[in-house]
Image 1 (cartoon, one colour):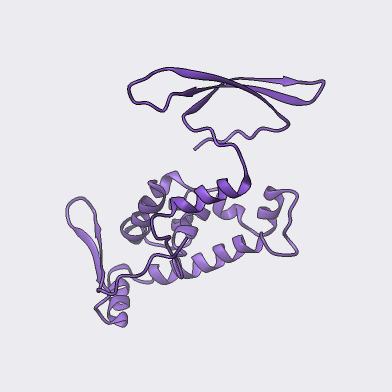
Image 2 (tube, rainbow, N blue to C red):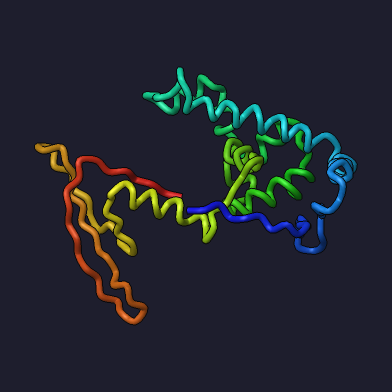
Length: 209
């Protein structure tokens, strides 16, 4: 995989609120002018957000470094690092409690969370919100970032079952295993045929949006 090359042409950032552009910024403009525009419209909220992001993301990254990593309990580690303050509330509540104005949160931060997560600030927690704002040094993969996860699956050697729904799950207390039955839909838009599958696993993970 290769990092996508950056277009050398000046880029213009615009945030559309449904009726008008709430904010615009151009790479062709002087950096200090762009900063001045932000401060003029939103006061010190951009500065507070930057400081809050560095503090929160910094604590989050410590989770994956000694002496915290490897951890036996993610909840205990998060509590020890003070991250529950960010994860126990919504992004909107976290920003308000930190003195970030509603206008900046709506116009700039929520625009970012919608692009990255397709979620509003009242639908994600504060840590997600801060990670979304940590864009310094961000890169993309030529051909699409989906290739990262695709290659992770290939490297793991895992069996990937797409278009498959779990139909039943039974635990065998004797062998301490789980029998999973699933149905895989035919990879054909004109067919509704399903193939039944059954397999035994030592552990299962339940995940939901």
